Length: 267
Length: 263
Image (cartoon, one colour):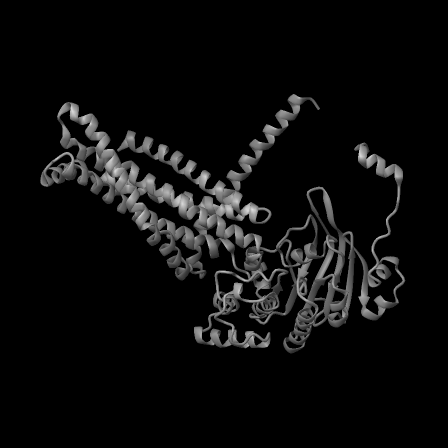
């Protein structure tokens, strides 16, 4: 076989593997959505206890880190905006820039990236370890569906908690802008508040929340998929965990691009 | 003789290009203990995984309690699985749950019982395997033998008709291993189960087996009772019983070819 044929064969294999991954992941998404939205009406109730535990782990425990990072990002945008706007003497528009960017874009995105790193990886590691130690097989032989048992609670928790964290990030980020405006820029509180209220429309806020809802699905699914995909032992778990974070951040940003394009041209 | 509770016909399976099982035909009758014996890598665990529906065969049929596991729908399969207990080689207890929660899980998920009744049943099952009072321990706090016992309690929590054990004595010292074998025997007579045990421990085979099935390279080499096995003069059976290592065949030409890498 010539070198050219070998290269062609290898790239063909990689490409077909890529489609296999996409196919399998879509199957997992459909199964999970079935377990969440259809199965409860057919007598297989969602495990709310486990869902609540996951909500605490993914949501409550992420509050400090999300708040600190969102606050810093709010401050950063405010400073960058002030740097540009100073030249036009239009300092008050810092309020517009910070609030709109936070709500439309950075609030949802930062939250999704933090949660990918914190909880997407945790989901992959947990499910991966369970697979390695035959716990997934044990579930199957007990006539329990691993997707319903493990993925559904995590996915529901994500879908509830990530938009909530996004709201928090939005407000804390805007708060960061406020702090800079009050201290360094010497703007009056009332003027800045009014400017923010005027700049923000409900749609800015809502498009951000729609995005974050889909980011939640992406993070939960990529984590779960990578977990089920673990091969070998501890090394495989580590590899899948890393892949889960990289892939989910990549997909989150791609999805963000898609949504922003959609909202930019329509709303 | 009764109708077999598990019927396997012409089962073929492979991992990639490597053939693992080459046409297995096997019947398991109600209330017997069948031991599937063979050396590591002969396909015995794979056979077990096929019977409980964890793997899909290339061809053949596996009928458990009248349902063909290979072609059954998810719901049909689950109905059969609810009447099956499986003890995994590593125990496979859920590490995030206490021992009690592990044992209670199938009951909570599959029976409409009140929580207090489930608690009582969990304690009963743990008592049967000699782990009374351990329900609030985490699996990581238990020793290897205790983990196996806890896993066994979970496997029998739904009062199964068939119990599968994958290498129940693997990784245990001989005294604990005999304890587990004895426990399997006791449970079997107390709960009137059919038991299928996969092992390579000759010591446990003669304690628990009613019938023995010896696998070799994906085929059944021998099937019969302990006495029949002892009287068999099949060279492989004799080798297994005498625990003799394979004789090495010296073939200088073949060795040279292997080294050079030419066929």
